[in-house]
Length: 392
Image: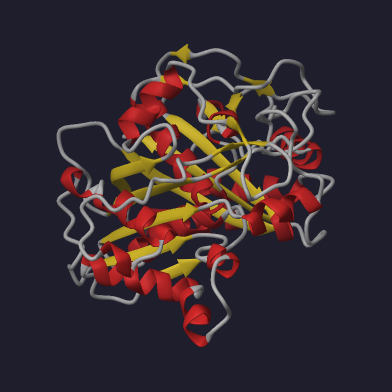
């Protein structure tokens, strides 16, 4: 009881943090609205590809190879394609927000797993190349482009990078260190990235099937997503508040997740407690849902441990593939807009239950009155994250 009381007192003193603008750049579209409309219409970016990344065809959600993301970027040749993708997503949020990027009270946070790693496949090793593939070097270039005053923060934490970046932004604002945080994440698929997952035999030979009996691996995807956080609530409209967040670790295996789901369950419980929300009030779960045998099994166990097995759940991987460092942010953006539009999206690829413990996988577009979403994530090294979104 004492521990619960301490959490309550701490929450009362924390500043509320709101999403005041967002953007998604994906093979489906250049704006959040374009993406969300296509998802509601049942469109997916996943296609069969044959290119230099793999000796055999593979399914993925990829940008057109000719897409350079140079629009509106002066001296675009200074930036790599990865950096231009992030700049493109961040600048697409500017018309929708009053936040000034050069303000002393604004911080930039970049989430990615591999950054410019693809340069190693095209250029000879040199000191300059080593500098260019540094994640912080990319973040500095992006921050400099927009005139951010402070040095950027970089979060590279496997497949929960985007969620950890979001939670980090929330904590910095709650602590009073900043008033606004621009949180952006991206990854591009390269031969290195694809071959790594193929070496684990983790890439599906068909578009992925999250939580399905016949699932056999992930589908990869490319995207960038940006969320602007602020302690200043937008007036005159509904908006999304980041009401709680937590991170945990399995300490189980470098690539294999927990066999019990207890550690993701711990993150879920902590996020729910911080948000001061009852489990019955959670309207849906945006799951990580990679469609690998072990991830979906672990996630279903964690959801059951949390007593949320009857709560509607979806995975967006069937629309976008696994977008790595962008995934947590992209899926949070879509989940927020799902709350705002009172819509729960289905889970493409799911047909038959395929986990040892039941979860309520949503299979059709659903409408209602929705106010809370639980977003979950997990990744290599046993990392887990959970965030509660609240519609104000």
